Image 1 (cartoon, rainbow, N blue to C red):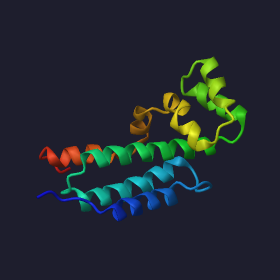
Image 2 (image 1 turned 180 degrees about the vertical axis):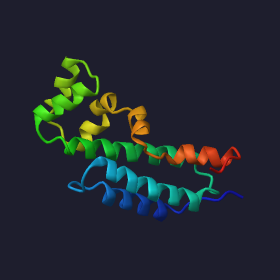
Image 3 (image 1 turned 135 degrees about the vertical axis):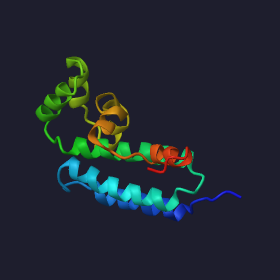
Length: 142
């Protein structure tokens, strides 16, 4: 037998993450703190479930959501350009992304991945469900 998570539980998780990352909520650091607290609790509840692939997909979706959140916090093109340069992007790539007319969700999906990769979110302290799941299933529940 394998323990699974009901689709409604995953939908509730996504709804809660949407609520925590809605526009105008404040600095991204606060959103990450709230997310970490919630994700650790959610993982603690469902850690016995067989969800490796689901956790990877959820982590990816959460990072995508955070990239869009970050993009909305840079409303002016000049601000976007300055921030992208500070992240170490080449000038032409930073201009290409900053002057994009696409919305936050679409920009976060493709172009912004190069500026805000997974390592960036680890450095910011974002907890990942999949790593927590791996730690538990390898015998180290911390």
